[in-house]
Image (cartoon, rainbow, N blue to C red; front, side, top):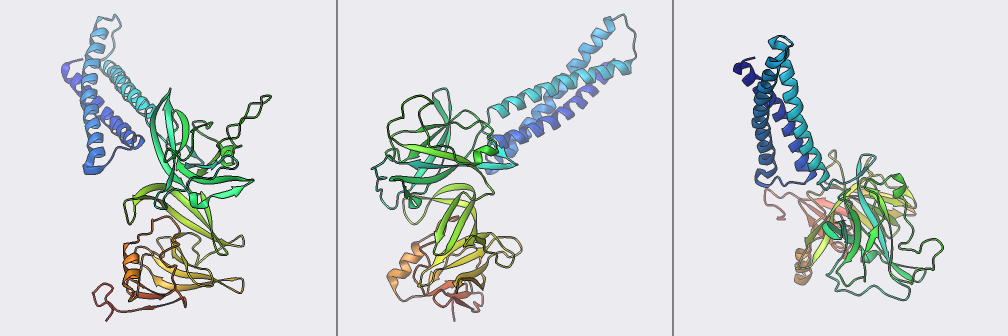
Length: 414
């Protein structure tokens, strides 16, 4: 087998290795969440593919020469074609094994979230204070966080944070309980759960959750930690319980008048809203029920935004979720124990609106207020009155709306 055949084998091996390296690198950038900012992840994938092409070419050429040399010394006389096929097999086995090893190492070192029934997971947790202790009263602009860390040995190597909803705190059997949730971001390491700010509780917790939790972990755990069987009870202190929640299932339920509103969150973000303090927002939709019955509005059972309306009778302003009715908004109220829905029209973008008022301070407060996405807006429409949307005036007192022509002048009423 001559050098021309060896170079051809090198080209074939390089091309196949390039494809394998490209696929492996594409998975690796997703496993490691490599940013696509300014093409960073794309450049990495292309660079790895180029390395695969060059490496495969070298391996294919060298392997073919080694196979040819050994075959020449062999007493077995076989054709050039069979030698070439053997060389291709050896070259591909070598190069693809190297790519596979690199892929396995990249996968093992990556923080890949576990899944359940094909869905990534949130870790819902509740923190319980000792009897007689009250959660600290922080400044209203400060929000609490759950922090979930992954430890290796005694080192916290990675962590993420999520909201701890102190506004949902409840008194249960003489003890305060505060719920929260955080993204279950990795299958690696031992899970450590604690609360921020650091002085909120006195200790953190080791979460006995396997790398890939099963369906049984969708139910609440016992209050932990607790004494082992046969040992004396632990002193009264901070306790917690947990469960996993698929990201297409409700993780939080709140009440607005007669309505129960469940939040289905795929992730959380910490943002600055109207000041230096940070608040939690979510990538979320909402499901609304009344007396246990799901509220459906023109076939929509999930809503991209929900706001509570001020007034004597509790009511909601909702925005439908879905490509078939982008931005469609509705009033949802109760009339003689029956759900009543009144269409408003299209609310472009979000439910953000400004009050039509001559009160300068009220206008300024509303202008500077920015309700975080993925949370029920309990503030923006607390005062009944007229509110200005794009091309539409909404009266939250009478639950009516009226359009007007902007003539290309956005939100200027003639």
